[in-house]
Image (cartoon, rainbow, N blue to C red; front, side):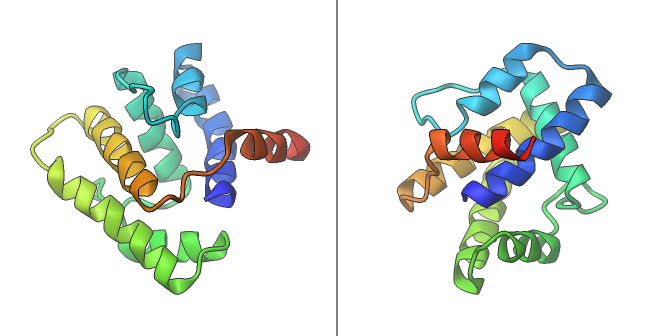
Length: 138
């Protein structure tokens, strides 16, 4: 999970320049893995959509591209079984939020659902390790 999160953080920098979003988005993403932190801002969902597009994880309809997502996870250290569990978790979260029309709000709700699923699998990465890795690559 830490390698995947690190790659998302790199895409975040590109999206930050493109969308010119506020600092609260960075704060939301920094605290993303804290289960008690509530992500509420639509702008954060827009940043997640942008990052997912940059990483080629969405299909033309804006839904998770299962093949690309599984390969992405495998290319970042996940085994086949783990990659499939990640894709299944996101797909389940997408289905649970299929009624949300706004793409940014849908991404936000899917992200919150995914965070809960990863927490239940006990796969939440340690933020101090992730931040250290990201900073060392800058």
